[in-house]
Amino acid sequence: MSDKRSALGALSAAEKAAVLEELLAVRPDLREPAEACASRLMKDARRSAIADDVASALKYLDIDELNTRAGYRPGFGYVHPVEAADEILDEALQPFLDDLQRRACLGMGSAATEVAAGILLGLYNCREGGSESLLEYAPDYTAERASVMVSDCVKLGIDLPAAELMPGWSDLLS
Image: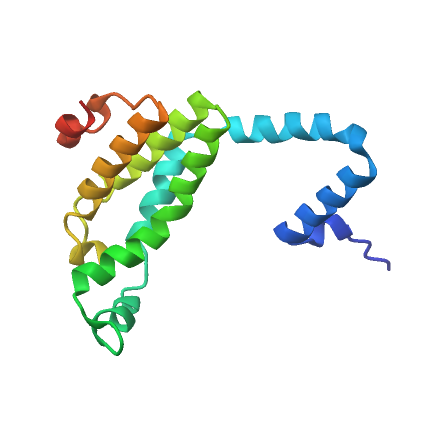
């Protein structure tokens, strides 16, 4: 019995990227179709999926991480739990912000708008925090990050979603 598995299917994301780079180096004629595929992939952004991913990333962080970052830290002094929670939450949010920046810089306005809307909705869905989560330690985190994001979107020329989607933040989105 021969179990023939695909080597490509077994590769990690980094290994697949290396294969693509090598393939494009050997076959430059494939660069144009590869660019078209990449562009289609980058333009496909779903607001609700991004919102769910953002909310999950922020709500389900390990609260024990706070113990390693808050309190007295040699060489740093005292780190307040709110400051430590903000730092951990920022690290979880950063990949989404990087994705937004990337799409905006590529001139993919509608995709950037969807990513921005998804991030804002994800933050909005976390605004109540929740007990025993890092958001409990940083009650203003979501509104503060949303405010910064709105400013960043204006600078990037990204259209923001209608304020009706987030009635509690209508003044922030106006």
